[in-house]
Image (cartoon, rainbow, N blue to C red; front, top):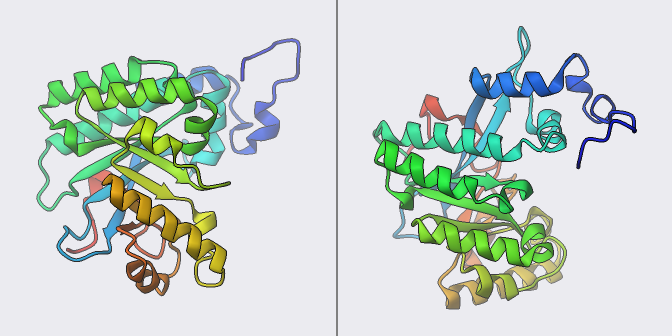
Length: 272
């Protein structure tokens, strides 16, 4: 969304948590320049035997406010979007993640997936930046996944395909997030050749009670198995659903029922 001075500024209305900022743009730049953001991650559990227990983790971000607790993404991401600064944020998250990986923490999760904003799809600066950081910190590109939302893959086909090719070109994994949120379309799998798809929580939450959701998930798993793509069930909020996911041959699970998001520097990952 472009800033238009002829209309009321929507930031205060949309984000009451930031309404106290006199100059949001300056505050966002300071947050990036002075590391007022904090990188979190949420481990992803392997459900099938013969695999590392927690091979992946999704990278998340929080914002520190002076004398206040950390703000969740919903309170500040829309402001970054409003000021067209999402690629700056994506680059900041990528550098902090790669820097942390380079410190070779014992027992570290194998690969970390970084969310790619819609704005970054049109800006090859993110892929070029990730490549530069991987070289700077001597980190294998296989330890980074770039996560594209399915809405973007369906609505912005050319940009998504170009970005996925560039990501694969530097050796990083590609992940499609929110898969089957509305309907199941496998065209993006052929076009983007992702290493993983994250099945949307709207499907996962219903598999215990809905035969339609079960059939949908089984179809996704079947196609992904043939294509060599890993399936990750999102929004697994109850541990009881894990047994059913295993029986349906889902490869991985993520959610509060698996592991809570935690600061990446804490390194307090679930035991293997």
